[in-house]
Length: 128
Image (tube, rainbow, N blue to C red; front, top):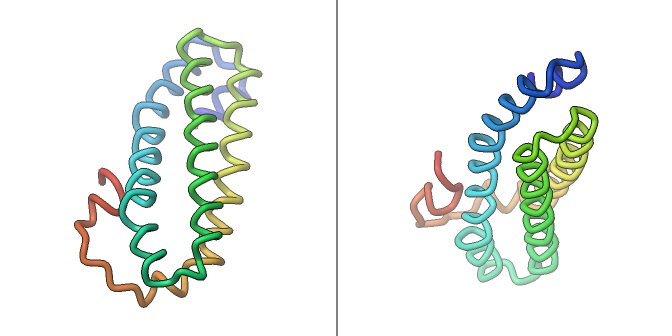
């Protein structure tokens, strides 16, 4: 919906308002999810599957990059950047996230299907 507003050339205020909601909702949830993975899930996987440590490091680097991109988007929204710039930020985030999730799924799905983690779901996946 936010990208639709930008594509339709909606007034900057409407697109900015939608992006504020996006950032405060989705961005916060995504950041919390990544922190939970980095803090709880990935160390547990590394202990059980040391051969996956390079994969986990790469995923943590993605988390850091995504957090940086989300911070740049927040800053652009805060200063009411033009729609073209906001769309550029959204495109970058979408591209990195798509690659990240595909890689994570390819590398960890089999492990996660059989992994027995005794942590609280909120600690692993972030705020739900």
